[in-house]
Image (cartoon, rainbow, N blue to C red; front, side):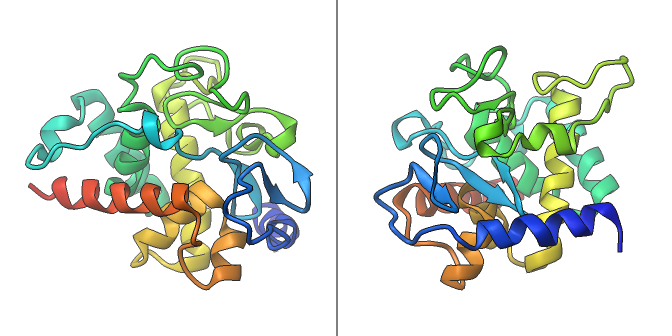
Length: 216
């Protein structure tokens, strides 16, 4: 059994301890107090959506034109490498940073409003939520640095994260993949579907809607 699979098994056990109380979103892993919006995916902590008021509005009919060409190439290449749906990566990138166009805290420097996540895919970079970036970081553009703020590095890391979530729920369940990216795979398994957390339900609804728009 490989290192990645051992990590998934060991840390998923922690994720399954997540409490069911949706209103108390600041505690989602084994009773440890963490920033609002904390999530665990594939057994390791990962980013979550901005608060509802900060989630970008997704206009109908925009299709793939909404995705900057450079980001579109990265989503597709990372998806091909990791065997995931590029539209899932695009939906995450849209919600988390509007494909890097957001200037919210943490997108281009520092950490987000919850002081836990960074970069265009808002991946956890601190110990309180598992420092997912340390596990998945990659130098995707070969510039000698592995930077969570670098779109290629961040998107390829997110691709690996989605691959690991997909290994639990399957490629044909994008709603569960999105929910896991937001609330944690443990929460999704415990609730046998999308957890009844308002933030997670909104995250999944927006993500699925965006994926449909990308078909046009």
